Image 1: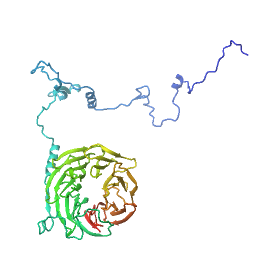
Image 2 (image 1 turned 135 degrees about the vertical axis):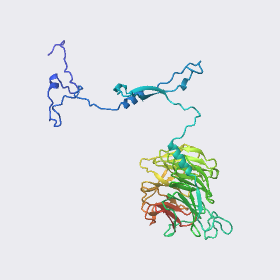
Image 3 (image 1 turned 135 degrees about the horizontal axis):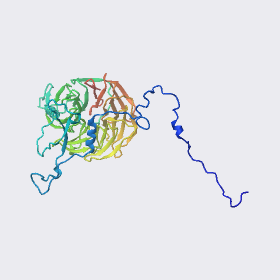
Image 4 (image 1 turned 60 degrees about the horizontal axis):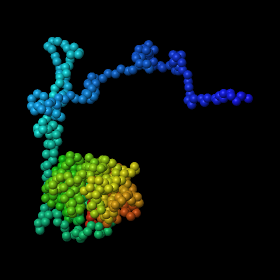
Amino acid sequence: MAPQNALIVRQAAGPDHAVVPYTAEDFSRPAQGPANPFKDEVNSLKRKNVLTGYAEETEHRGGVAEKQEAARIRAKRQKKGDATVAEGDNAYVGPWAKYKAVEYEDREDDGEELASDEEYEEVEEEEEVIESGAVVPAMPQALAKRKEAEELGAETSVFEGSEQYDYQGRTYMHIPQDLDIDLRREPGTAKNYVPKKMVHVWKSHTKPIIGLRFFPGSGHLMLSGSADTTVKIWDVYHQKELLRTYSGHNKALSDVTFNTSGTQFLSASYDRMMKLWDTETGQCINRFTTGKTPHVVRFNPDPEHSNEFLAGMSDKKIIQFDIRTREIVQEYDHHLAAINTITFVDENRRFMTTSDDKSLRAWDYNIPVPIKYIAEPHMYPMTRASAHPSGKYVAYQSSDNNIFVYGANDKFRQNRKKVFKGHNNAGYAIDVACSPDGQFVASGDSGGYVCFWDWKTCKMWHKMQASEGAVTCVEWHPQETSKVVTAGLDGAIKYWD
């Protein structure tokens, strides 16, 4: 037994990591393992210029170093001068002192070859400073764009109907009253049915149709915009003829829309111009542009703001124009991609927009801050929209072959019970349209079909072949019970009943 005064020694704990002793002999041993078949034994030590092996040599142009040096060194400026001297040498220039630029000048002697270090000589030269108010000539690219814009101003309109005036001197703007249907009644009062057969075809456009719009309220006229740069207006009743052609764009159209009364309409084009036309005379009243491509244009249906319209642009902005002053009244710029749809809701006090950024936003009119922002990970871009006649919902054509319904009240939530499926819209922006009585939903199809769904049950009611190419435009007649007009890539406008 150990005495009481013995030293108690405990076993020390080992290190918590492995300790491998290395000596100089270990580092000087030859390399172990398989031999490298690509190793050059002769020149193995030729380029070992650093401790761990060798560093590769690279070549670069001298201009790279000069640019880097210029980026690091602040540009030289003239002296600020003496504040007591107004003119002459050492005059005060203060913050207006000019910069000095370093240039290189070739120096050659007759018959004598320069040495490598004598080829260039640094010359300090003052940069040319443009004084305030000086007129600078435009660049050739700017002149070409200006010339192109000036050529866009040649708007023409041709009447192509059989008679411009009837026996009482009335034009095609007069709503006909000799029909078996009252076109002056409130739209949606008659019950709608699904059409079964084609009753007429209008042909005049040479390229795909981009938009169809019936005359507001009565529907006795139809407006069509096409990729052939023209807008045409058609007679829906009587002779069903082409009445007038409006020409003034030099690129394909992107959208057309009537104002609330139908006396004027807007055409938007990929030539970055939006033009306001008189429906009756064909005169171009005003031109609007922001330098960007307009994708969608919509008049404000509210009588107090009937002189204003919204334009969804390719630069992520929604621009509010006044047609009387041609000025921009407001800008809404919270979207992150090009604008696709603009829909007025809540008695025209608000509007909803969708964009290629896969989001939906709701705005108060004249206030450029969204009151609702909807963006889910599973959402796709919504390319077309149609407000339900009840005013409570908006149907959106989604790029994932679905039609979704969102509320148009304060919450703007998606109605997950209403999803319309069974069609294909991949690769195209295809219209969706609600019937005037709100009972049916219609949509085109990339395979040439027209599809009809029941609004309450969301079941597909009917699907019929309308064209060989994609059907991109669908519109219900506001007064007829079962009349629908369709158009697409073939350029023909078809009327169904």
